[in-house]
Length: 383
Ligand SMILES: *Cc1c(COP(=O)(O)O)cnc(C)c1O
Image (cartoon, rainbow, N blue to C red):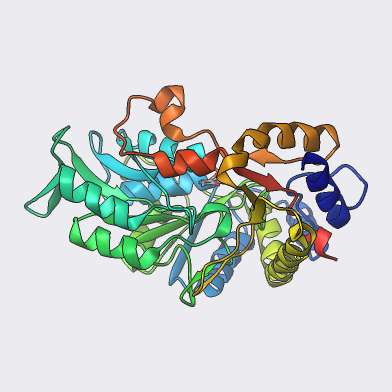
């Protein structure tokens, strides 16, 4: 079976060494970055930041976008703006990249880990509802963890590998349990739930433009929201809380230097122009992989749910439950063969900094975490 999988991947990606996800710069990247260099506007002043923010808002349908240095910083500020304070708890999936948990910790709050569902790879709303009914109480509009007596302030769904979580179910939970919904849409630029862009359902949503994401600014992120006050606060907090003035440096609170530099935004503007083409290629790549794996028993590719449109950021092989023992041999053999593959993240509750955090039963995340393998997903393989 290991050999069959290698052959299937090779039939799609060719015979060279292949990375998991490579950026591609075949649009206006050179022109826009050159303009930054020629004009010397490479840093905190320049037109590309505003333009990138406008383009992002247009693309996602959010009223506002605020560009920042990375997705972790975006989530940190989004959580702060949603009222997360020191001593709070925040519900996050155990199956996520560490940034989700880190952003909670950067607020002085504690991540509280919840289980995922097989269908979406995101938080399971049914299981979470039962858990919250059994372990929390609602006092004066706050959700109190009966075990720790802490306020559970927010719920942070993450759209795993670009597949939208069950947002209807999760919005209902946020409503019923007095939780602020903040979406970690770092992986889901170009993914839609019932026709609406992911990241625009919560009070705030966050995006990442790290080098391995669907589009990249080198490093970068953004906060999206429909609330004009929150957008203004996000801009203020991410730009050292400097009051606008021609020459004076006066800051009215302790804030952050999280602004995205102009040269990164220039790259972002060019990348965003190509996003529709990247998405089309990634969708084609999914089809090509499906055909290549059609005759291999015991393994299938994760596909989008009905009513959802995935960006297919990372193609994901799922092994049948009785074949989980093959995950590591497959990872070893593919990487030895020059095909970069990787497993899902180690669950957050198993990481040293987060092992003592509150957590519900995580059996589903645990089960499929050790059966998932991401395979090369660069859009160029579709052509
Ligand atoms: C990429 C990513 C982030 C943000 O990462 P940065 O490297 O800080 O941009 C956040 N959450 C998830 C789930 C991610 O995959």
